[in-house]
View 1: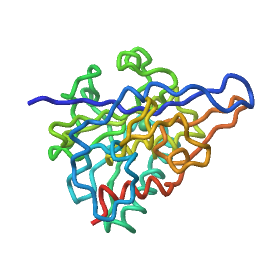
View 2: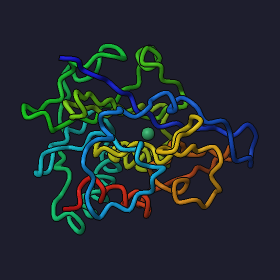
View 3: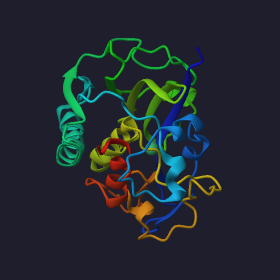
View 4: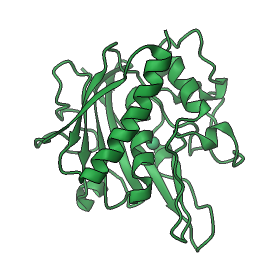
Length: 259
Ligand SMILES: [Zn+2]
């Protein structure tokens, strides 16, 4: 069986000078959606636009909350930020799909819980039923680079799918690359990936079914979404945070999970 691995990353773009907002988009654009994933049936109540139809990844199939193992090597402050982001998704899940998405606990993460290389799908997700996943602390810069990730990537979610079905996934957070003020925002974003949300827009040129991030106004729904591929660093110590789900995030979650 052919296993397809996709790395979905969170870009952090530093402004060139203090007070400036901006910077080039990159990196994340290389991960084009799994074509098969766009064939999954979306909910009848799906309000996502035609230009986001290419922004969906294979959903989690199980109806039960999935088990999430949070690496015990995260500091207690980091663990608490991750738990907060899990609560945000669970609150939404309970109110709108009738269930919690995640059931999380802190755990010791054994070796072999991460891909050995960019295309490796043999890592252990920790759950026999394939629906659980781990959130791993990964600060090794050499390893990070081997996955084609840079210092601008605060975190990455690796999802393995076959025939448009999710097989396993892992979230890795590089705590060196993730400013503490953005930790929860980053975790919230990666959890969106684990649910099957791709970026709200693509860093590439864009297509009819996947809008380009490049031309979006600052207040555009795709730009303000948690699933936008970039969080800004403003260079004067200020950072952009997104700790609540925006309309576009919840609308697209409904597409995958609303009964
Ligand atoms: Zn991302």
